[in-house]
Length: 269
Image 1 (cartoon, one colour):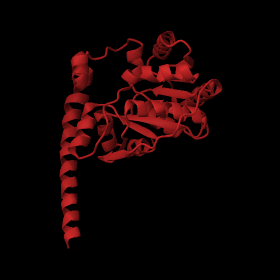
Image 2 (cartoon, rainbow, N blue to C red):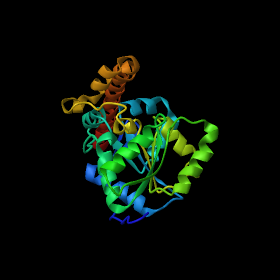
Image 3 (cartoon, rainbow, N blue to C red):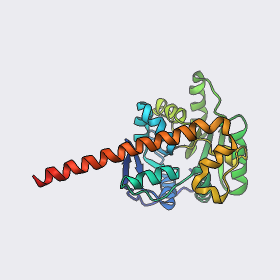
Image 4 (cartoon, rainbow, N blue to C red):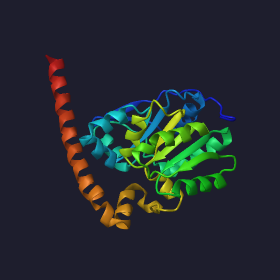
């Protein structure tokens, strides 16, 4: 892994929100985990970093397998103000919204400094390679040892894994969309020989310039910017999805309060 250096392990707290486990990480905490996991060089039992946003929460509500896989994440961060506010309403404290398209630059800067390598897997043909070149130009010393698009047949998975393993990256970044990316890595977890696997969704599209990021004044409502950009493709995810999330959140909050009242009555008896 080159000049990768170990970093002291920091214990991170977590909260539960509607059956999903979320870690209470700041950005420095998260960057430390990227370095710590890669530096461990445990290729037989890769560490996993996942994200959860409102869309992921909606998927997890109906998909028990996806929900189970999210619970196996070694670090699961909140990507979206809807998750932060939802947790706050339910009395759960999360540090802040963390979005991969923002902090991937911090990860790459740290990996360049420490000599940690990466492999990019996902998105349309050419996108992963373009994102890799963009980041390598920005951070001299960063080494992306391989890049492959995410359009594949299931029968090709063995070949893809062999290619990834042969490059011996310190991190595998996979961006084929949720829950496909999480289910793929769960299915082949025992065969992937990489210390760290990071599921990122569409992040490489933003790095490669295939998708536009929201302006700063849209930062706390980036979903709205994306809705305006691609209304025909996104309206169901954001309009119906957000309404469904809020409805479930309200029911979850009421159930929590009722449970707390029952506990208080029992403690007084």
